[in-house]
Length: 295
View 1 (cartoon, helix red, strand yellow):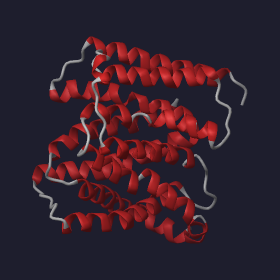
View 2 (view 1 turned 90 degrees about the vertical axis):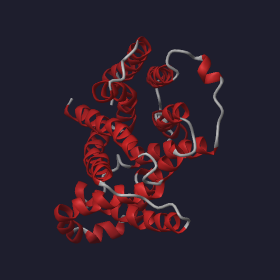
View 3 (view 1 turned 135 degrees about the vertical axis):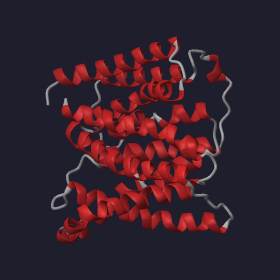
View 4 (view 1 turned 120 degrees about the vertical axis):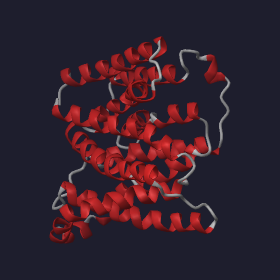
């Protein structure tokens, strides 16, 4: 139960991130936001993890390829694609595709890892996904048929696939590398990858503006959205496994709607409640099967 709560806390932080990111508007282009998000997290973690990093350097060198792929799929390229997509596609497409990672987790586990997925587990995943679509479409499924797709949607799909890969690979315990040391290495790789993208963006004339309001938002993105949320998510992911923790990801639209009502005054409507029930039913079905199935 504790680790389920960790997963919920992580998604709650990410849900609040949607609202915080609105305050930035166009003052931070995507590569700048991705760079500062990882750079601030790296700086904040340094006093606590640098000693461990030096001590565990031999094991880190031995597993650097695995750690590099984790950084690409969960931080550097994943975040860069995510922020780039927000500039190139509409909110409805973005909302639907962003929470499709649990579906990709199931597909990767079934066809790449050759894991057996029970039909009740699959039913739960698809039910929750339908609940998300229902909320995003505001209870009017005709909206979905009028959607047009753009290059931003392709970037969003790629980011969702990368996040699914991250969740699956993060299940593996790396011998000789502690949790915080691993996270520290991932942020180092992320900053190395994001820096040239950030500089290219600056060279192309896409600057950023920093004021008191933006600074607060950037600090939240770096300290909470990256660092704190990833600590909670990784703990939940390793204990529960990528399949179960992937279902928790479906809580994002529920939490976003609740936070929007509390902070922005946006009202929760009937389609929200119906969508919530469908999502929770899907999570219940998948977890109910998991509890009764042999390990």
